[in-house]
Length: 286
Image 1 (tube, rainbow, N blue to C red):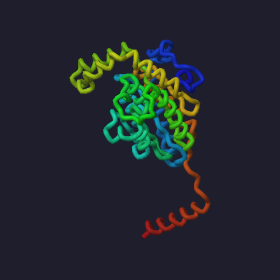
Image 2 (cartoon, rainbow, N blue to C red):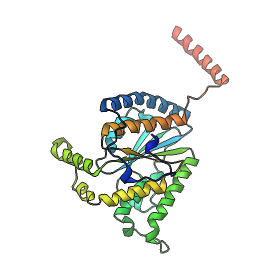
Image 3 (tube, one colour):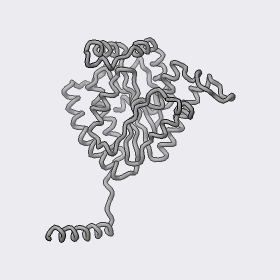
Image 4 (cartoon, helix red, strand yellow):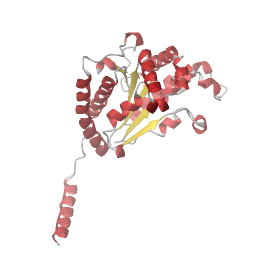
């Protein structure tokens, strides 16, 4: 996974990234490897939940039709629901717009032992917000310079993520990198299948006109916020089966790095357990 890791030590350059890479694997091999990872992910998540020492945010960003929803479902549906919450960040509502842009994100930070899945995130404010200059339509204090808003947000994000890391919450940022050609194929597939009509919107085609601007916005966001404590993973997304396998590896490796364990029981607590066992055994004998 090091080939897809950006931790600030090197720059992400879209032109040098192969979105159709398969790592030399066939579809059957990748699916098999992913399915081998899922039980391990499930086991480690149970330990994470029991230990309650660290929270995790798995954050997904991508262009439309890259496969965020399907990947989240395929890789993370193995997790126990009581230890996981998913948040989909759409356009902010009036209440959210009345606060600072990280306010709605902070409401969704997981407790220690919990996993939060972010389907889009605070990065929308430096991606779509940057492409369409949405900040120009918002109300600002007189001392705010609008031409510095995006630059300031990169700084805000780095500080916010370091703050969370310093408080036992790590963020794993995953960018599913799909090509323009593959996106077109997936849009056409939606338009060719009545069961998928609901997935397509006229806005999808309109946003495609801004492809180059979005690519620059993603590139800038990755390069300006990738750090050792909160890196980005850029995942080839033209082949869904390979993308899902890679994501399963990233998640599994993250959990292995945390290395959660079931809490140890003290001798005094074991004594209480012995007493409870005796009470229950006597009850069963009656």
